[in-house]
Image 1 (cartoon, helix red, strand yellow):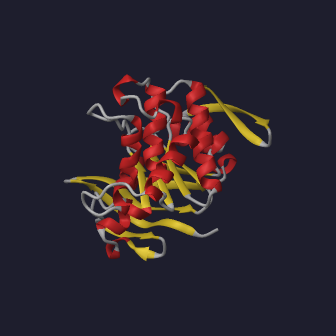
Image 2 (cartoon, helix red, strand yellow):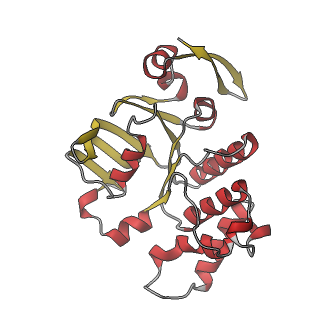
Length: 258
């Protein structure tokens, strides 16, 4: 499986505060890779490094077989779509116009949407079950509806890599499941999908691979049963879990602290 995004012994931080410490991981095309770890472990920092928003203090990042440093800002924006943690719209525009912002990396400054752009936006809204409220103002939508529009904006970029930072936060269980299904659909199209999650059960059920980040280091990457072994759940998260199988996928149920 080809690595669309690779981190090799990456270190980075904020000022004098080191966050990532020689972290190595990769996101593969056509797969959903979950990034899990305790609060402050460095999950979001991995994404910020990949987007060129935070400089490395050591190591390398490779995007589509090219070093991160060789990418222009515009080229990187066309190659990596990003759904930020707690993403919101802070002005009252329609859902369609918000989703259309995903096409900005493909357009000249101040250029209007082309027919091809509009078709991509419409498809993204449809895939996210958001077409029915596309003409409504974003501030009139529920949190679940806004989450679907914001994901549609990321999908509209049509980038080969999609990074979603805690997209399931603040969603009810039904919307969490629908969101993960949408991410799996995107991976099925060949996109390398990376998603940070706090819900280990959700990660085990819907992710092809899991990257476990602990104290700034990647301590495991592999299929969910291996990366989220009983020993690692205890070591990293301080919890125990029961495991069952449904439709060939592991269902992880956290049972308590240890």
